[in-house]
Length: 135
Image (tube, rainbow, N blue to C red):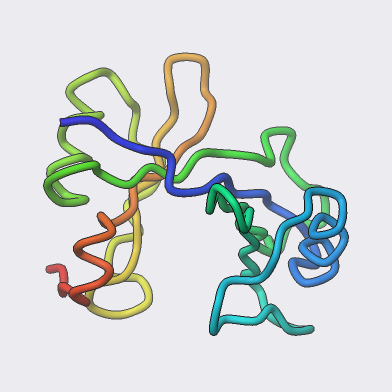
């Protein structure tokens, strides 16, 4: 089993404004059927050729952390919870378990790598497509 980078996340103060700024710089577009609008706290854009994605998330901190970009990893096979255990066994340090935060089937687990760089493990694409609930 291994992970793939589902998208890269950028912590920011205004997700809509920043996603709108990056779209013409990178030639990215909104997700089909999911336009980014003013006031959205999470805005995702994608490369129309490769489907590589950037997610801009508003954080409440007055001063943004020094580590503002992190990977969101989705399992290539298996489930989020299996992947959480796998990366933990590889030495990742759990920072926060946010599974179920936004209702059944939502959430992620945040980790730090050996140098303190943050990353999150999210549900697999199959889990997201199936709307699989989590405990």
